Image (cartoon, rainbow, N blue to C red; front, side):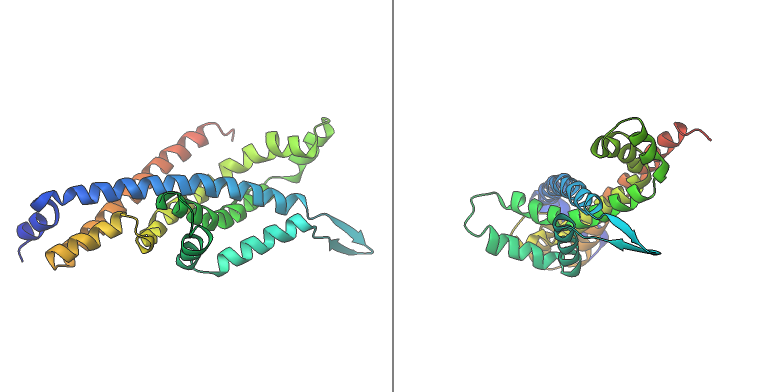
Length: 237
């Protein structure tokens, strides 16, 4: 099959490019919803983890006391990071939401958001611990509560440090949504497989799929580079 013939059968014949456009829309909507859910879960889990692990000194030894919220946060992160995303997706779709009337994209967004939340929590926790403890002490010396110090002093500084890692997590999330076809969502990967079943050719549909994902990821990388450049301008060196 020539290149022109392969492209014609993949995109032009019977308006098959519309299948890619529909899949692209589903992938972007799913990724954005999952990112929002994952960020919300990640912030909550991170705060549960860092605010409920006090420590005290016994002799020369530092002892940490893990309270229930921190234990739950640690258990959640451990389970989510220790099991495959596709298994989590299938459990949430076919078991937890088996009798739900929610749209499959919403259910998938919840599943991917829960998965992403574990990684986002660790990213945010690393960002919080990267801030000089003196910042927290300064906030407390001004009469601010621990929660207000975290909200107005620590987190804004941490966000700047963790932004590249958060964008990278979003990129990973976009690529992970390629398994959404397991529950019947017509995403990009599903569109490529559907076209392949019509053309009896793997090369052009799958290479086109790879190129589309690459363009999405590259666009995010460029936007991230510009954002980082703008953030550096506000830094005093």
